Length: 325
Image 1: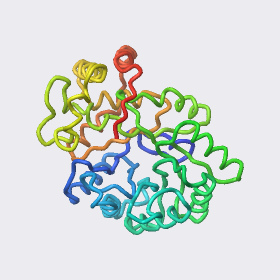
Image 2: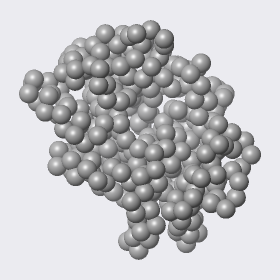
Image 3: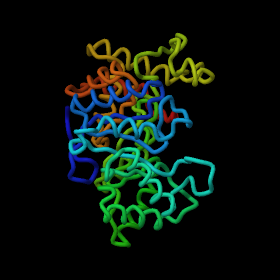
Image 4: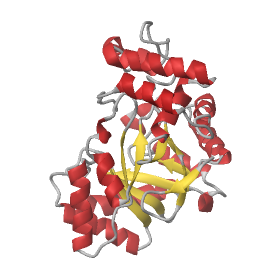
């Protein structure tokens, strides 16, 4: 495994993180085994959220944190864990957003589910236009000072929103964000327009989520064949699969498959290696649901695409900004 500084912080994290969305996993015991295997393989960064639960079912909100807490027994001091706040977790008026009230309440709930006394990185899940940014940042700063979290970052912010947050923290003499977490893959290169230049200038790292475009680049799908029975794109995403790999997206998948054959790698490993080839990306978050997925994704580190292969993948995917979440 390869390790880098986590964004602008000194703490070292694995270049691959394990995300606990578990969209295709229904067995908590198996989910725990996947987490434990990831840690044993050298992955020391586990990405979670207060709304994550098995099968991406809102009835299972919080269960991913519970499973992670069980997997961390005896290993807590060697693993960097994240959780997130902002998404809707209930029907009440304060069950959503980034108010001080919601943040301070939800961090305590996450800590109880995780059975730990601190989060290593607390991430706001989205920008909240209904709450003053200063209120959000003040709450996060107080959590750092109280020892409830070590660092914080932001998810799904635009470049200008990140800049505003940096400026606000600096103006108020507060702790500042260390990283951003946004989607980035061969199917969605929108970060390159403004975010890449901004993070390079400010010394912030990017956690790239959905680096396999919600599995379209995993090697299980083809541009000219139906989605495999039982797969995500044959079940909950069946209605949109017919157009998901049209045009340039299908051409990009074909290019990934060609490079994979030449390299003796899998499509997932090629797609992940391409994401990690960008110096702006600190970490790619893999969302494998099974031990087999995890083993495949681990093969993305320890080797590099050559310049010609990167150029070919760049050309095939140029200007793609498909939003997949």
